Length: 382
Image (cartoon, rainbow, N blue to C red):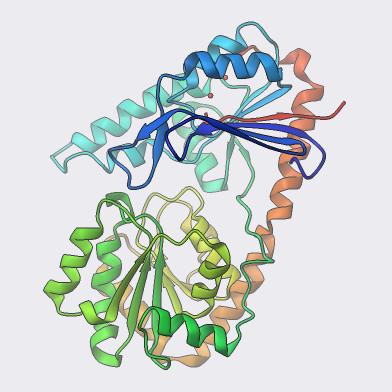
């Protein structure tokens, strides 16, 4: 949005722990004091920054506030909004099932926790001017549980980075780097290695292909579950075919990894959009995933991949092997993935957000005074 000529202030947790500010043309990124999140690897959260946030808001005087994490700093936003009449937008990146997935698997506990969090979410969403959801499926779920109908705006992918054009040298270089034979089929999974992602099911469903055809599995990402996943591979005696390179922040290298792979597999059941799936289809990969949440909006069964019932490792394994053993099916699915990815061009997301910001700003006199974090604060030019 800053490139599009708007003044933008982003307030987020410091990646170093100490506060600092970066400014470039229309964009100011304010990083506030933070502590490590004990539940996430390499993630930090703001700590005791109420006054600093209020001071930043008062100085910037935003015309619109866009919230991407509504709980931690929500009360600060509500306090600020009591004195100004501007629209407050919240994008829903996670639903209550995310919280429930981390609870002990005791009879009825997760269901009870999810209902409790939905009750809080219902109260919270009513305080925002509007809610944005990345997919139609998630919009319907939010409306059913809160009575609030979100505006659906998809996440976007930079198709200049994530694309299918592969140089043979690029593939060979990457495979040597991660100790993967040049001609071995490669299954890819990217994402957090945490409980809600069910990466163990990706490993178990890939075991058959690894044993039968010497397939390799590349698991990109980091998380609390990584030690357990490594041990699982050892117990299955497939550790020489499974690679854990960790989190890769360089998008160019990550895109090259997608392009070097034959198939993308994900077992998460609680995605609201699944950015990694969008990256995979933009690089022309067939997808094997579960039929849950919003995934069928992107993975069309039998067209650009296969979806299976959640937890059905046997069905997922069969889908993986079917794609790897049938080049014609894989080729067709690659083409369909590429075609589908065009609708997720990040430029479309920018345009839709910008149009929505202007729409809300122009009608601000009719807005309730409601509201916030990782605040993305966007101030349209006059």
